[in-house]
Image (tube, rainbow, N blue to C red; front, side, top):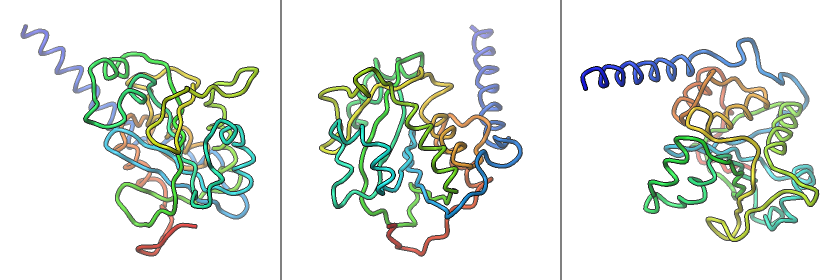
Length: 234
């Protein structure tokens, strides 16, 4: 028993060291993946205690690129819609846990081992900043386009288009879609967010499995957009 506790302690220490190094070691080591470009675009990162999402401002180009989502019932053209919000995660946990009160052992176990993945797509209206759960970043046109390519490639496609999961949603305006890649505790929703943000030209930590470490690394290596207090983003 003492040996088992010792091994557990060593494992937890290694995990803690990995998380710390994953936060402070920048990725990429030298510069962003898509530096430079024309007029800056902005994106938002939404954070909760275990998950991060990327919010993309809706314009004609974004509506055209993600028209396949509109065809599947995501009402991105609504007058009050300002952002398309994208998140990637464990199929069992994401779908099976709309609220903390609905947390069950099965989805948690699936998320901690190996699970299929889904894309969750939602809408957001005007977002007033600053607020502690939202960060805004300016990116280049080239970086913005590269990030959208990454997001689009995350959706599973067949001969008939993307695969929306029928009858599953948190509300009236969101939906779930089958996604590429397998989810596990080491490569989860926040590492997907980090990878997408690197495509946009931002620098993250080398490994960011938790929202708090991702936000620390984003704050360490990138300059958030300056926004007037209480400002509403167009």
